[in-house]
Amino acid sequence: MFFPFKSIFPSTETPKNFLVIDLGLEKVTASIFELVDKAPPKMLGLGRKERSKNLQDSLEGVLDALSATSNSIPKKVILGLSGGMMKIVTTIVRYKREETGEEITDKEISEVLEKIDQENHPLKLFFASIISANVDGHKVLNPIGLKGAFVELNFFSSFKDQEEIEFLDNTLASLNFEIFKVLPSAFATTKILLTKGIRDFLILRLAAATTEVTWVKNGGILDIINFSLGEENQDWQVGLEVVIAKYYKEHALPDFFWIFGEDGDLEKIKESITNFPWSKFNLDKNPKIEVPNFSGDFSTKDLVLLALSYEGGYDANN
Image (cartoon, rainbow, N blue to C red):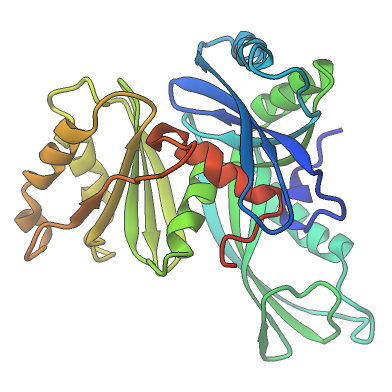
């Protein structure tokens, strides 16, 4: 039975080797990663396939491609989700505990998340992260294990269609894989920039005909928005203008953009963003536009795999 809240709690046993699958905008990518001490995860194999309407075929195809580069594929899976309908909610929950002398437990947090889940029916909560917490007036990173009377929890929560979530879990289970963490790929990618000290930015993930924009304000995800214009569209600026117009009156537009693609050359897109009419959105100068640059085994189009691999237990802050 798929347990959607397990993503919020630290894993009691992090596998040394694990599989990362990214259901991207137009491609499905899978890679094996190995954790060695405190070093960044090491990529051991890679498979990539076009994402089709039949997700089962896409998953089976990318695993077949991966098997051609590796003799053994780990059974524990970190699954990243992008594209399609995804609801993002930031929720602050305040409550008074009856048993003030008892420690806050996973079960207690799960009961709070159950209520959040029910409030967003018919969508299903598949990922939640505690952004901040307060116990008896004291800010804490993790309330689990603490005692107190008054608790305030600030959650970042992600919802998708319940049938889609159950289908993904059942499909991977039928192939003898086990999901031990599932989350929005954009959430994992955002954390890489946060470790660099950048708090306000837009991340643009581009595919041939689709774009996903992640708007981050003060370190928190404001929204994840998809639109059907991508690298191949000459009028790509139209989609970006729609996204910006949705929020800029209430939220100052970030002056830092991170752009990366699932394939293709990003120089034309970078030029298009540079020539965007920023003055109409009260920006005195063009935002800084950066394409991630990696050395070693990683390419820009592997950024999401790298970000998701960090969710296997690597602390990028060290």
